[in-house]
Length: 100
Image (tube, rainbow, N blue to C red; front, side, top):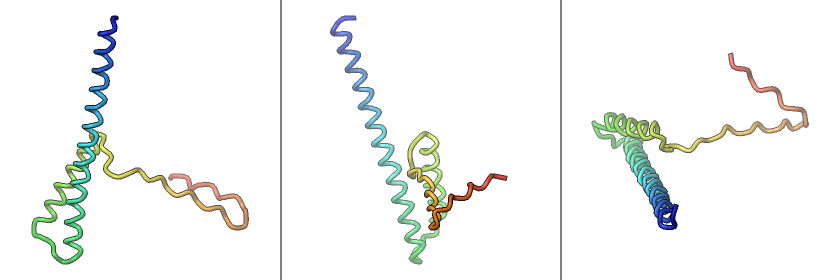
């Protein structure tokens, strides 16, 4: 493989990476816009200014967010459950509950 072939391969690889990054940014922006719209509707509802079509719009927005999430978009950050605090007496923690 010649130098030009290597340079072309590297340029193609960099272009692919740039396209992926751009797609990620567009996806994140779309998620943020949908969440903003959803928040505005909820605020309207909670302040007694709801519109008649709010429930249908909420359903549409949630559907779009679920579709993006199914495609791999991060809609909400994954939050790990909090670690249990150690008992004050220094006793060991009880075992976690077993699923039934």
